[in-house]
Image (cartoon, rainbow, N blue to C red):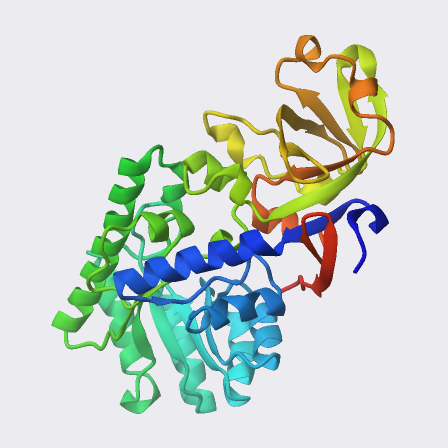
Length: 382
């Protein structure tokens, strides 16, 4: 077992104890609400992390790329939801996974996409389940739950394959939950997500169409939902690591965030109150998700090498390979940065968006305090 002092920087650290606590919290919440948890593995893109989620009770996984689907299927996970609108050129690779034995579900939210899938399934004799994406918040993709288009897509999918049908249900993602402020707003948004997706399912059933799956989810709505009648499963992803956006929403505390980037002090600009590190945006990502929140955390909140938050120090600017650490109070609050952060000092930085920061790295150094326990690979690509 090595230590942090042996690591080259920048690198992504994963606090295993914090991650396990987050996994248990989400699973216990879903169990209490009586729904299945289908975690979104796009945050970690790591077989070992997903294995911990499944061991805790998760059923199936959600992916954002067919690369993820293939990697996890090769690792023994066969119940997979590809939760991104299915582009025509992705139909072939999706069918290949089904032919190899994957229980893959795909998502459509338009007639052209539904028709292309139905025609390809008929032509190639493939039975693949499809969910209709429902727009529950005006945030991104999906069909409004009261739109005639919902039934048109449903009928197209149901009639496919000579009546064998592809329609498996509905799904939604309430991305607007990331814009909520306060517990009451999050509770209300969770109920809006549930009610609108369930309403879509009820419309399909009333039209004589099957709708066994009602899938909702985001980390904030999953943890703040008061009740989930009519829902069969919840998808959430970033909870496995948490991040500063989640902390800004009140979903977690900074001390709950399992992912940090270890960096090294490489220089100073004493007159400006700057501390220069080797953790630029190539290590942190360019995500500035907290910029829209009451407390802007720059490119990340700075911690000691041991993981303790250092008050008001943030990575306020970032170049490709340089992070510029500053005090929120500016030069007046910084003091003597050379004395406080000597060359070679190791700092951990909490990320704004765990998914984006993790994507900058080839793997995770799994740690327990100052001890390195393991190295877990992750994968990128589409």
